Image (cartoon, rainbow, N blue to C red):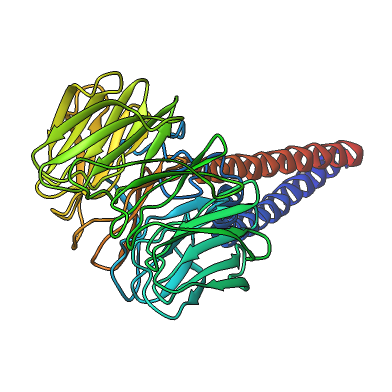
Length: 440
């Protein structure tokens, strides 16, 4: 009798173990299927989280109001293409990157806002004409850009809705610079304009020349180059528009956007021969001047006492900021109008040979290059390990390493789910054994 009872209990225990194991397997399979279904959502959410929490931005042409072209952001180490976005026209405008969104204008008349991680379009706005060289500026929650239709536009950065637009008498090829609630921009109607960035109301204007650079704004002063009828470089008071000083270049052809750093105004002359000038910020007096064989249409970048600038002779030059002497020069395949960006010990620039280059900041040695399908006049924007640049082939390119953070998030969630499975199994087995012992 006792033997039969023990045998029945053993059979019951084995049946419970078998049934429990089956239930556990079903439970495990359900978890695996559920995880496989939600894993794409996890990865997508991770990417969106990355886009919403970008540490570094590039909010305007050449990154800041001084147009230094320098950032402390990590930069691409390879020429890996992450994505490219096709517009309906050439992209000579330079991109801006803020809060995980990249903004750029195209000759197809549109301003685009794209997800900086995926390249997916968020919104677009059609202006009345092509957006030639004017690059978007993003300040707080607004985007500002000029168009060849004669308007300066202000948009809501998140949805592209129009806030205001201001009409002048010519095309806006210049890129806007916004400082302390005031917008500064040059127009082909020969005037430099200062507008209230909130309302779009005119604050002041000053007549200079037909084609102007983008204004650089530093220490309460506005610096801008112009062609006919002025053929001069100008410095204005940012609040009043009063002329503080002007400079006449040697051959009267100056239209490049200046860089102003450490009391120095650095600007190239777009003549033959070309010149690079270093002027005193307060007086306009020449500190040094350097002659080049061909025009200097690129805007200089500066870092650690070194100037980096492209030339129509196809070289990128590194110059000593103290005297203009050459530290190194590095050859591309064609004219360099694109303005260099400096990040993580590297120089990034586009060339009309259709390639994007990465060069060593100290030596000029080529690290990598990437070939697009059109001339590159756009200047690179660097943000959070990625490079963004336009091309005349109509694409906006994004280069950089695959996003590691999304992989980390995915891995963490995977480990978490596995831990839950193990914990559930442990608890289940523990309770099951207690029940068996109790019945025994």
